[in-house]
Every structure is written in C-alpha cells, then in structure tokens.
Image 1: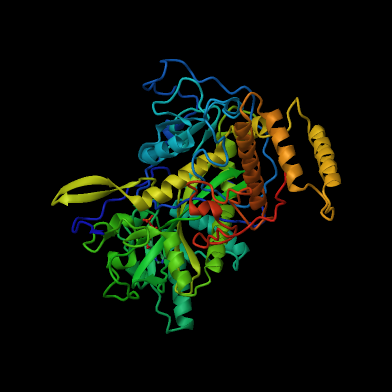
Image 2: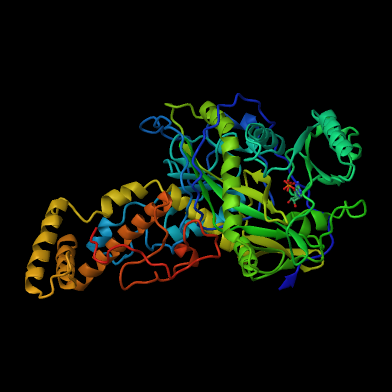
Length: 620
Ligand code: ADP
C-alpha cells in the first residue's frame, strides 16, 4: 500500500456548459422491475468532461478530417431508415463477464472449416473521440478481438465511442454511446426536478432521493418549509448541503445548518444550485464515510432496457466521520467522498488490493458487510430498484430529446449510454441517490507524486478491473453482429441437415440402442446412443476434419448454444443458474468469478457449485 501525496488544493471542477432545456415531458411508462445484476464494474465519475457547446452540434456539419480519413468524403447515409419505436418495456439486467473469445463467440482459430463458419467480420469501433476512456476502451476492443479505428474511418463504423457527448460529430448509422440530452437531464437541478415529479406522484417509491430545493427560485419556499418543520419539532437540528448546478468533483459544495447560511451574495443568480437535506447518518466502514459509484447501461429507451454492472467502486473519505456540527461543517475530507478531493489528503491510501485503501470495489464492501451478517441481497435489490426508478424518472424527457435530435424515419444512429450512479448507504443500509453522471470517468490510471511536485500517471488496478469490464460488457451487449452471428453460425441444422432429419436420427438411434439394452426402464437416449448420434452429427456438421476435431468442434458449438440459452433464461428470470458448462467441462478456462454469478445475487455471492437441471444429453 502506498499513501497519496499530501497538500495541494482540490482540483477545480469543470462545468458543463449546456443550460437545462425545458421540454414537455411525455407520460412516464410504468415498467416491470425485474433487474438481475451482473457484469462488470463500476467506476467513479471523478472527472466529468464538459459537453460541447450547442453551436457545435448541428448534424450534417462536415466532420473534421482526421488521420486515416479520406479528405472530403462524406459519410454515406444508412441504407434504410431506422425502425419505428416499439412499445416501452423493461428488461432484466445482466451482463456476463466471460473471457475474451470464450463462450459467446467462436472458440477456435485454427483455420479449420469450422472457423470459417464462425468468423464473420469483426465489429468496428471508432475510438477517435474517446478521450479519457480511450485506454479502457482499447483494452476492451482488444479482448473482444474487434477492430478499432483510432483516427476515425471513411466508411461507417458499427460503434462510435464518444468521450463527452452525442454531438461530437455527424453520424448517420451505427450506434453511439451517448444519448442526446443526457448531460442536460442529469444536471443537479434537472435531475432534482425530474425526481420531484415522481416524488409527488409516488412519494413512497421515490423516497431514496433527499428532499431538495432549487436555488434561487425556491429559496423562500426552502426557508418557509424549514421554519415550519422546526416550529413543529424544535428538537430537529437539520444540516443541508448546497451543490452548484452543473458542478462536479465536489466543486463549490458546502454544508449549512440554517437557510440563512446560504451564500446568497451575488452568486446564486450567476450560479444556480440545489440545496438538499444532508444525510447525517451514513454507513461507516473503518469509521469513514464512503459512497458507491455504480455503472448503469441504458441500452435503449424504447423499449426501456437497463443493465447494472454488478461491481462498482467505493470512494472513501480520508478523515474519520462525525455527525455535522458547526465545528466540522467545513471538513471536506470528512463529509465529501469525492476522489478528486480526497486524493489531496495526506491520509489518502492507494492500494493494489481491491478491498483496501481509499478506493475499493463495491463487491469487497458487500463481502465485508455479508461477513457481519448484513442481508446484502436486500441492499442490492434496493439499489437496483433505486436505479430503475431513477431512469424511469428521466425517461420521458430523454425521449423528447431523442425524438427531436433523431426523428423517426430519418437517418441517424441508435444510442446507448453508460451512466455513473453515485449512491450513499445510510447507517440503516437504505441506499440514497446522490447524483447521476452522464460521463463517468473511465480513467484507469491515477496520479502519483514521485517526489515533491513531480507527478506521474500510474495504472490503477481497481479502476482497471472495474471499468474495463464495464466497457467490454457494454460493447458485447451492443454487438450489432451478434444476432447475425447467432443465425449464421450456431444452428445445428443446416441446408444439408434439417432439424427434421436430426429428429429422425434421434428416434432411429434411440430405438436401436434401446432394443439392444436389457434395461429399458429409462426412456430417451442411453449414453451409447448419445455418443453415436453426437459423432454422426459432428461428421455431418464439420466435414473434412479428423474425427476428434469434428467432435471437439461440435462440443464447442453446443457449449456456445447452452451459454446462450443460459443467458436468455437469466435475462428472462426463469433460471437460477449461470455460467453452467456442459458435461465434463465444469469451468471455462480463465473464466472470471462473475461469469458464474447467480441472478439477483449480489456480486460477492457467487456460487460456482450451482448446477443446471438441463438434461445432460440435449443436442440442441
Ligand atoms: P459532485 O458532482 O460535485 O461530486 P455530489 O452531489 O456527488 O456532487 O456531492 C459530492 C459529495 O457530497 C458526494 O460524493 C457525497 O459524499 C456528499 N453528498 C452529496 N449530497 C449529499 C447528501 N444529501 N447527504 C450527504 N452527503 C452528500
């Protein structure tokens, strides 16, 4: 373990420069809450980059030529308009972490005919605008064996990875990792407004967000409401936190005990803010306050599809916590968990371990809580429902943005986005939403002071572990060729071998072997019949190879099918197992623990001993 550098002023946050835009909100859909949790990672949004000014956003603006581009050649429009929006629905949330090239895709690359069937063109990713997420993105693309275009490409790419906003350049097809309007929607004031609408409608469901007032508009209301409660309960000694709109990294945040302490002088008009009830009794670990950064993938708005990464980051304060008092209100290292602030504390602990230090994985926190008897399944499911409800609150206005930027029927990309949810656990383990970040930091390095005043960027293991998994699993979920690949490659039947022929084969071989065996109590295929049928199918499916390679190829194909089946079951919430392999191959080589997680279970509850109830001799 190493200690961080001491001294230094907190880094100044940068403001997003796009004002909140008032738009008519469509009615919120009511959607099923069915979120399992899996996959990879979470990070924190230490440094959210500012969005580009609106002037930069006109679609159709010629894209600045970059290295690798043919100058002056416009991007061709997509061949057909996008599909019309479908009715909204929510899906279960799950990402799997599997080793690259394992399970989901084709396994062999020996140049055999089997490979030819299993090797469509790689997915192409334009990373020219990835900015600070570039390192993690590159690793993810490499792991997936996809193709990166670091300087952009003359032809369209499948996926465009933007570091900041949807409006980085003109895109007419493919998928872009930002939704129009997201940055505006998650600004502190806009988020507070959106959640408040839902709080007014469903107060019980939306009690995970602290009571908030928007300044300067609601200053008088704030004063009046606080006075009213105090009059009714003189023992009430609240604390409030004032957060400038569009701020980040703790910039400009301060605590107050009374509305009269708000720094009105000249600042509020120029810098609107949210004032919010301060959560005085957070859960502490090692006597320190901490928060959770969870990564959430908004895969689609219509239908609403949300995925939650099953691991995240926990960012710790660096001064032991005390409940707020006039004496400690200004102690930022005690009250604010921002990494960008605490890194400047002499007490900041860099650690190579994911379960110690000032930044840890959330799963390590859950493990620790679990070992103390905490019901972490409940914690996790409360977090999932907080995330889903928050996204539901944002959805109506996001749809308005979406429809105005990418009108249906006109060429345009589809969108997805990774959001950073900042969550605080109260002492009673209730999760509280602090904020949502549209551009969570995907940096996988941190600054280290080598000698006084000399800094160097060094890899951060905890960031890499969490964030690379988030990006990689997001890419896999967005894989535009996945369906094609499944259709092309993964059918046991083919033009020369119909499913009807497979059925007849099954019946013939089963009947023959059953007539030969004495014990006919078991209906269905005996093992010998299964082996014979399997070899036959392998020979039909993978001609030209030696028998052992044919058999191995068919095993791979079956494994692939089964993992898809598992995945579908998990997504639909019908199965309680994941990552189960076919007979004789208990654990995929190099599989990460999370590949075997059980749906709905928190990240540290992996139980690799779970078995599938699937018949052992299923062929398709
Ligand atoms: P920023 O975008 O500047 O990071 P946040 O809303 O995330 O602003 O607040 C910064 C930090 O302040 C949080 O990480 C958390 O530690 C603390 N904080 C924010 N709101 C509250 C609250 N209502 N109660 C307790 N602590 C809070």
